[in-house]
Image (cartoon, rainbow, N blue to C red; front, side):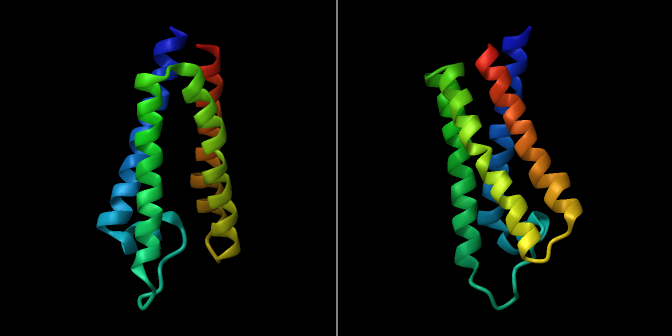
Length: 123
């Protein structure tokens, strides 16, 4: 029972980050608002698209590791990639975002990614 749960959670998280990345590529300003730090109207959208590409690639990489390298490699990936939402938490707090978004979205995501890593290590 642990293995399907471990893989299922990892797949859902990888697909979610792929979706978030795609949203930053397609609707960068709306995605930035959802991130917790709205983009400036006259700001450079290229930086938002860079975030989108980064997130999309991380989602694809996680799925590829699950498919081709197995649970242990995916667990190490999840363990290290948890640094991204932890960093996002700090970025939101430093740039005037709300604590609710910083902790309720980004920090909670980091915790869930760490749970996923633990389940994959145990699978």
